[in-house]
Length: 174
Image (cartoon, rainbow, N blue to C red; front, side):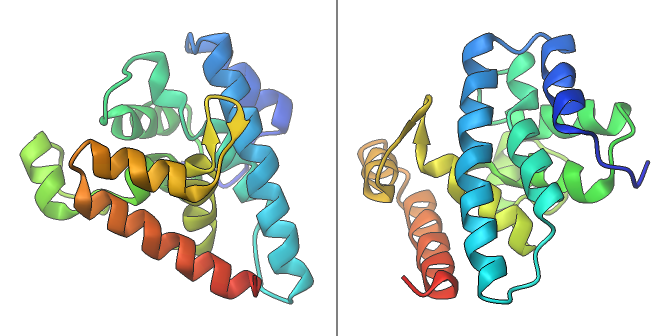
């Protein structure tokens, strides 16, 4: 794997080359906007953050939607990112952003390879959280996503998203 992050233009080009629909690209750009806002607020509070990694992770988090619109789009996107020789921290953001994270038990029921599918680093958490704040291309309160998950009987996922929200709000001091 490379250790060089792509430029914003290269990231968007990678989405296009892999056949991501324009609405997915627009969603990724909206997620990047809010993720960078969060990263910048944290940086002002002297929290160490890799802003470029956050931007690229947000732009490419739905790379797998070029091939799948199911829960496995994170795993699919990570494979595409690996084959494009992208850095491991970027691949991990793509792999771990879904649903505030996927537990080992859930991953096993999906038949995924044994791996970590829950956001670990602050950059991974920011992208996963920002994704939950964007519905298509529109900002929504976090309660909208939590209630959607609860309506779909995804109680554990709703709780993970709530905890992610609380963790980031605490860091932001909001």
